[in-house]
Image 1 (cartoon, rainbow, N blue to C red):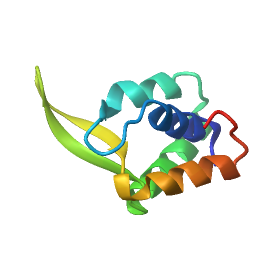
Image 2 (image 1 turned 180 degrees about the horizontal axis):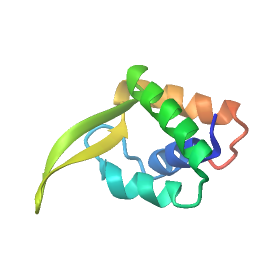
Image 3 (image 1 turned 60 degrees about the vertical axis):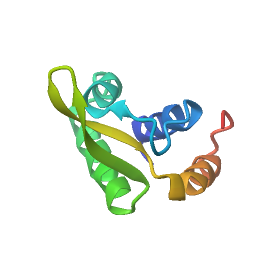
Length: 94
């Protein structure tokens, strides 16, 4: 798993962004990607899209002050799977 993707899932899990608690996708993702080279960004987005296909993350349009933005959160039915996935990757901060 990509390091940036592990960081994303760790931060979301640590801040309990599960189900109804969500964060704007654009700002959250851009913070992680600004340090990555272009080829690693492509790999990140490939794995990132796979998380939505596997129903691990939820992506919804939410009303904001300037219109509608995409927001992401962990699927509450798969939160335990995220915790196990991160433990399996050797992340002790969970």
